[in-house]
Length: 167
Image (cartoon, rainbow, N blue to C red; front, side, top):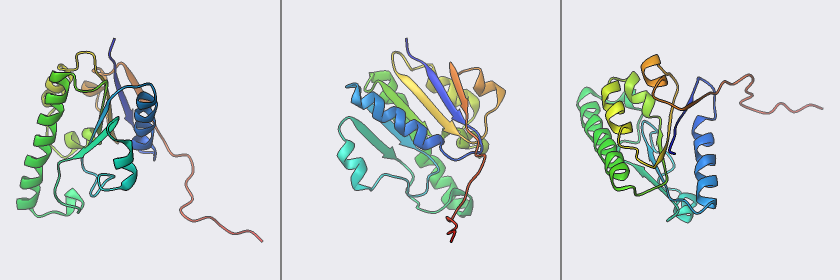
């Protein structure tokens, strides 16, 4: 039975946790599709990601490498259309059963920025069939929370940006 997992919270590590699940699934012979949203450049162009293919496929539909919030209104509208194309692709992936695990990285941020509505996300998730889905993002509202089978809240208790040399 397929499940919907959510990794949320203001801590660091939601996307790495999802990537860890992707590696576990691929190690078990499963196909994984990751679609990144609101990640500026993201992982898309790294050699590491190319080595994971064809077991783990990564997609990013946004064209800008800038933070969404810093874009002009015209560019935001253009990127919103690109993001919707990414969601349409996710719908196709689910409807064709192309993968065993679909990760929608930072998709919850699309709700925060009013690029999509909860009903858009519900419609997408209703297509899951036998595919497990992981959603990540900082904030989680009750309406989305009830859609999940498992919710993990990630918080950072301590973070040192630069190691302190003792001596």
